[in-house]
Amino acid sequence: MKKKMNKPMRAAGILLLATMLTTCMTAGTFAKYTTSDSATDSARVAKFGVVIKTNGNLFGKDYKDTIVSATDSSITVQAKTPTSGSRENVVAPGTKNDTGLGINISGTPEVDVKFTVTNATTNKNIFLKGSQTYGIMVKADTLTAENFLAKKDSLYELSSDKYSKTTDTTYNVDDSYYILKDVVTATTENYYPVVFKFGGTALGDTSTDTVADTTNGLGKKLETLLNNKTVDSNTNLATAFRDTNKAITWEWAYEKTNDTTIDGMDTILGHLAAQNDNDLDGTDGAVVKLDNTDYVPVVDQTDYNLDISVGFTITATQVD
Image 1 (cartoon, rainbow, N blue to C red):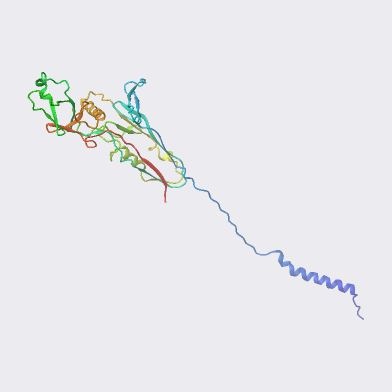
Image 2: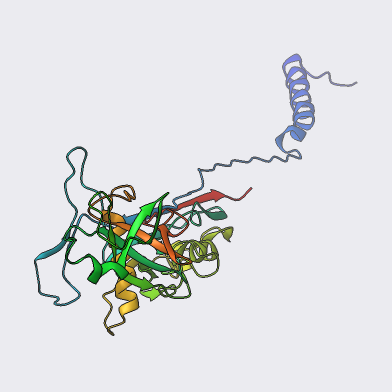
């Protein structure tokens, strides 16, 4: 006869079996396939940092005599104060600027940069046209009836803006007579007395417009060094532009070889600056040029120019 399991034992056995089944069913939740990915990124603005500086100046209102003696502190050239307005910058024989106007490009940009220079070839330099004979017509204020015949061959009369040798045989008190002074025949080439230098090296001589000459002038020099020049990112610009980071200087040198032609042309330019709007009948004299056997007024910008204009713009732009 079979023994029957008592109720408590049977209940314990059922509970144990249920626990074992649950354990088997849940064991698979302890591990599984998994994959993941993540990303972060950040950025800052790239540095431009291009620095373009010009420092100093080219011209002044006063000049010390540094040509004859480096220790002479006296002012030898000084612009006159006008009745209205302010004094202007001037230049004259024997003046110069050894420090000048400096150009400095620096920085290390983190982008490609292109440089351009503009307005550099529209400048002007002082000049006197070559291959012409010049002089100053001044009134013969000391002329009298007694000395007329002795001076007759050197006397001129003014008619229709033209000075011609007088045809009078006797002194006429109602006529105005003129004497030709400071006559000089200019050199074959145009005369440019102010010679510019870049980095201490002259850009030409007095026969060259060292400001605006399209071959060797200052404007052309700057364009050759800078215009459309491109530099790569992270370039040290101070190193890359060592040939550009120099000073512009100038000199109107004294004539030192007793060349009367150079002295004469300088004198004509000085008279032109002093004359009052080419007043042909003025007592201070009028600058004239030889035209066949007569003398006629010189023409501004054709025969001469009395002003220097120097300017340029340097621009740095990120390359597209």
